Image (tube, rainbow, N blue to C red; front, side, top):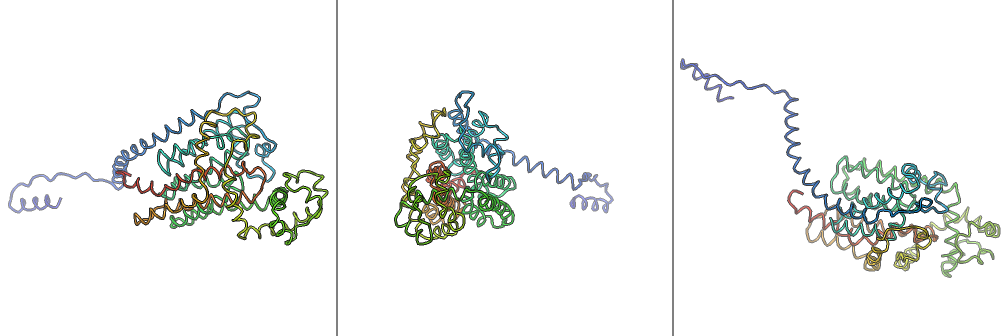
Length: 454
């Protein structure tokens, strides 16, 4: 434009007829912004297509897993297995969190629930495996989801299937949000965290280490993270503390602990006796008995013990949990507790028609369990990766948070009750087996950054 104006002035000064200056069309600010948006969208389109194509192996793996684990035809009268406590999940009550009730109200409590739980399980575990180690991770995760200790619960009206699937989804959402913050990823993480916590109050013990890792890495967004974290903590307090004091859940669990863990262990029984545990003949006679709290005869014959349950058991037991003795007890028992032998599920399997993968994939699930003495060494992988590359990525923090969360869950479940340990420990045991894959999340993140276009 400047050169054209100079040429016009020079030609005029020389008495020459100047050449016509081309007219430049005027462009408004709105038109300029729209043009920039079109150019930006056009430049991002190939990247989006590449990312979509990268997901094809994951979608194929999930499709294969769904085909293998799709619910086989079942008698119309018994499309899904019900248990004595199933009504407390179909109907909201008994002090339970609301998510199972909302879920079964949406999908029903028959074959539709089996299909919905199967689809949710394969999708969640496939996504977790994909984010931690790509296609190999997705294959391992889907094999775990197809094996007996996991797939069984898709055929029941209980909270285990939702806890397993949403637990895997929470880990996947945490890893995705930690690696890259976006409003969409934040919304998914917040939603999954709240509904996961709303399945069972005990699920919350998986949250603190994962939340801490996010808070450290994405500290600029501490307020957004804190709001959702506070809401999840409030759910835990309401259903695990406030409402728990209004029913007899604590007394039932504590009776199991005293009869099957405290009294059979002489040093532990001596410790609790010194702290004020009553010694009544009917209590000592019931040593080793499970679910005695449901027996009116036992309750009537142990009045001092019942008063102790109501007034002294909670602070006394929580004080003991703060010592080193519970940690030693867990370490001595954890290898056996997480075994998940098939016979442990006989009560839940009876009358259920499972897909063939329940048994075909079980040996793989069983082989993935490491002795705890070796499992703890998985924490060295993120440290070694950081030292070798002289760089820390979110995957390193995620691995440490994952291992801490699994141990915290194991501690809470192991010392929270002694009844149906195999059922209540199923999420912890599955995550324990997946830990060798999860431990490579930081390594995989570094490999992905080396790829062009990532």
